[in-house]
Image (cartoon, rainbow, N blue to C red; front, top):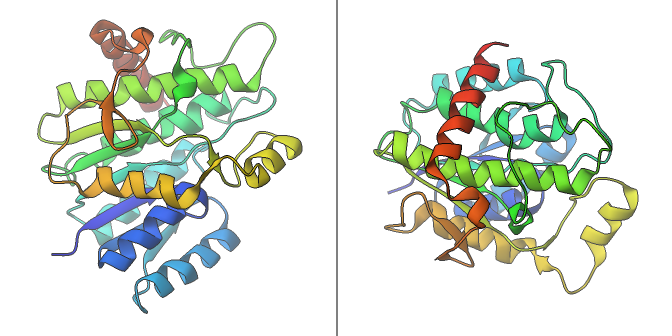
Length: 269
């Protein structure tokens, strides 16, 4: 039976690779991306993978929470039941930028926006699962639930990205506790050859460094987590197996504080 699977960050990289693989299996894939041109190309590729079955797609910029709310409305109007949500959209912002909602762009795009989307789709996801693309970049990062505006001192893109990925791991674990009727996990896809990166040089490195993992392999990991018969609820996965995340993201009290602070932040905008 075909599943309805919503993938954010689906216009390139891991998200697109997973969407193609799911379409080839016969699943009903729903694509979400920020750039319309890249989304159009992704739709063509997923249609081909699905042997002519064209996927639904929605455009949304996660640096605008109004667009996240509009996305949820559009999705729920079309799909009252969603089998799985892949919170896969993410970015590494090279210099500090505050969004129109008042939050640091990396933390909003990588954590607050998917947190809000998951909340808004929660009822449609009952009995399903949420898979959040995190990263081993979370190791050593420390999340401060009292602030989503970024560091006060010098801004460095990769450490801030690491904090947002730590928030992803904490979110997945806390969602499993608060929403036991939804399986929620996070995973590390590896360092993937894709269109990812914070600036021109880093983007080139992510696209052309030969030893990086392919988007197809990382996408296969995402597909496995979206479709496997059973998973360890709340776990952090690496290469398809539950693994131990950093000790800094295993504290349920911290996860609860982050959840409550995130809810207050997104619902105050």
